[in-house]
Image (tube, rainbow, N blue to C red; front, side):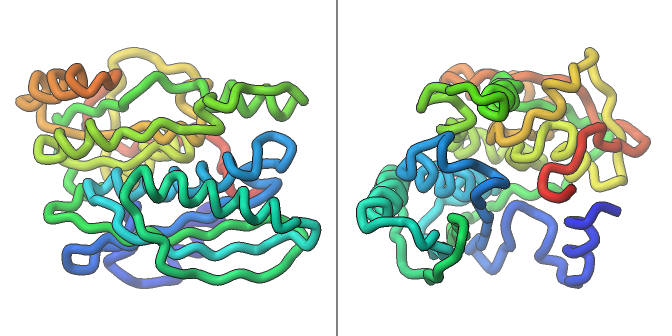
Length: 272
């Protein structure tokens, strides 16, 4: 068992296991965004760092077919940050909050050596989309074209530069597609740790996956894509393809749920 799974297993609660916890018609989700783990300060502007930290958290809400309403932000502020740096941070948070109609209602700050951002998103949904309703014969698909995020990260790690609109810096969320298609989906989550790893989370050691074609390790292990991984009954295929087309979303049906046990082929991203 990896360290992340072990740690989570110590908390016995049926609300754990999705992109967020469902409390009545509210969804509570949280992600960390940490310097030298998720980003380096010389890779992105401070404003872009704040914007991405909001986007990756909002992605969890969208993945559960919920509308984000409120945000709580906790920050470890490096001692060398100036007031101008803090203004860049707050501007980045506000940029995304305004775009998605979110109110930033509080949080906490402390000082430290590196920039650490923790965001809690409170969202609402009448019919949350979870990871827990798979059935044999269901089709499996993902939105978008995977691999660009890993390519961008590799370039940065080698000392290169990438455009400020590159997916690694500015992920494109699939809210229009999910909100229109959720009623036709059986289960889903966003692809944050790579298709292979998130597929193993979706199947939960209870199902296998029959791939229609071999996917490269580059595609399977590209993390921080924030595309959607979804499962649905075959009868809804045409409807979902139509919704994808109308929302200008690339929709790739790559396999189906079968008997067996799917195991991720990728390294863990969070712990060494």
